[in-house]
Length: 441
Image 1: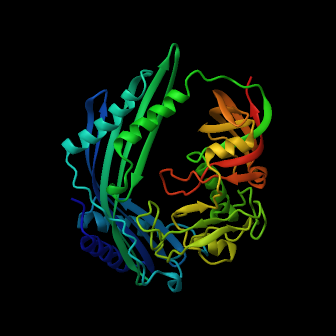
Image 2: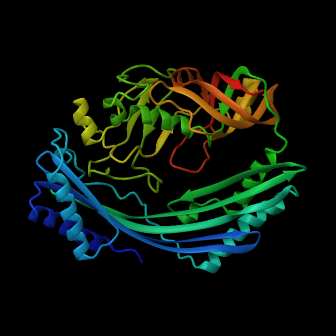
Image 3: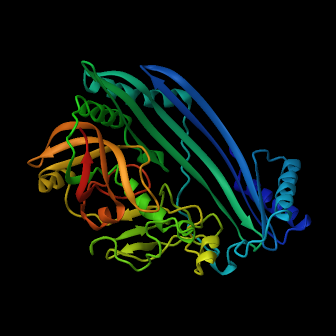
């Protein structure tokens, strides 16, 4: 069983008291504890069962403008004192940094909402096995071309964490996360293809039924069989909804404060610049009940709030923690630890309608490699998907590369579909880009 909120609060208080005792002028600490079960079946048999129990803490101390941090997974009192001691030793021997320090007290979360993030699943190994088997069997029964399986996995985890600092902030809450996934292989002659599907939720009652997970994985794998190569060309490209979040993450990565002050962003000094068509709005909402990325405060205790990142195509804000805000002469936006629950304006077109309006082009369903230059925005990724003519899918394609520049891709966004029923913390439909370079034969 994971430790209680009260136990974690006591540990944080002890850490902060020990830091003060050892001479630190300020300190913050985070302690977490979790427990879970993960079970995988393959070809109708249980392959792995894992019972997990994790815990850990991090302590950061400040001696004026000098900073030191230490982490440990040992939560015994002696280990806590040793972690504080190591952090203090590091801080005493580092250079001063004018931006080192805790978040400004005026921005800390004082009264924050209950976001309904804790839904324990009373699940034993027999029940987990049955649900995983249901997913895998549905995939294997879907089509005779499903010849092999990498397995279906059910995972359930609950945990708690507490963050506190010497400015008087202490906060935390229990969480849960549950998921079902399935990975299968399809074969037709010499051609083999692998694909998957999954779902992940805070509340296990909201999970997609295992049978549908398996059938979706199988359908994805079968559809990729007998892929062709394309000749090099320029054409419209649609990124399917489950692939489109990669584009949003490139956007938010470029707007992160650390990328801005280090001058390593293709959107450097871009505040209030227009980079999308007028209709595009991108928002962050950390307060969605049961949201996978929901949080009432960020990793520094700063209150999170819903906000527009892009409005009418224009950049409204950078994404800052206290340190990067100081470097840029701005105030924190409550984004220490990342962006929480992104969403983009969606239109009325389904994926099928988007394909119909596109006419001829490429539907991307898989990306490979890391070919995104964060400094220039140059984009080049290995890809697979389907070639579309007369508004209908004609055949699968593979071993191609799609290339462009993210600034041009954002500017040339034609539509975002209403096909938003994808797992994860990003709410988006498919993205239709008017033109990209496709490299093949």
